[in-house]
Image (cartoon, rainbow, N blue to C red):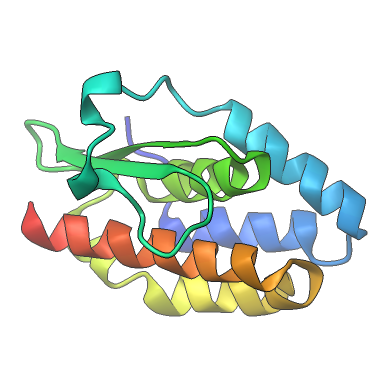
Length: 141
């Protein structure tokens, strides 16, 4: 089932997160992480590792019979799992083209929610690394 369009999804997230305090942002991220489906143990392999993350982070992309792309993801770290949750929810159920053209939307989201200012450098890098791997995997589908 297709989500609302990518831009609408991330604009709503901006409104939810833009002026929130650090603790509330973290709580919101944890809530998104808790929405992730169970990640298949057999897919926890090198080709699905998000490079550059301190914690173990895995990402899987696949297409359904209509050609829409879906993601599954896992991390041991709660905040990183939250990034995964919001990106997976926001980008799953869309075409390859929509996802590959989403970079300005994701950059706008990161800027408007002030992700870089409120989170540690490692977490900021993880957000970018996760999104980059998502794009890489979509290109290979």
